[in-house]
Image 1: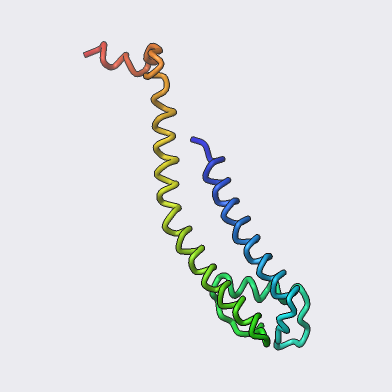
Image 2: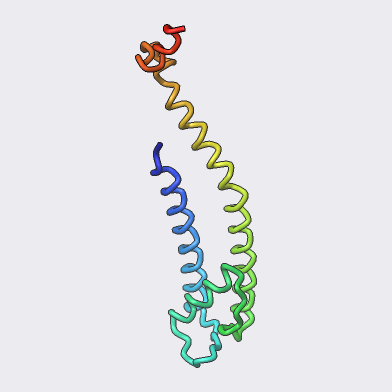
Length: 128
């Protein structure tokens, strides 16, 4: 059984999530959303952290935008994060079923090719 396909799928989902969080963090930081934090420092790391908590809809509230554009971006990111997680949860079983069907097809390749059956499989039939 091959684990490359499912592993690549999980890795791709992680790359997509990281890319979306990084993109929104760059938007918040680049457009000057004036992020307010409990510590006072609001660099790119803070924007990335705030983007991560917003994307996964944690809602901790320790990083808040002060501009209207920043607030709109946070709402869009929360909605996109919720939709992303919903799509992933609904799509993973479909992909799992497709991988299972592929494994069945691979195991039936010998029979479709017309190759002789294995000795261990035919012997119990001959002994009856």
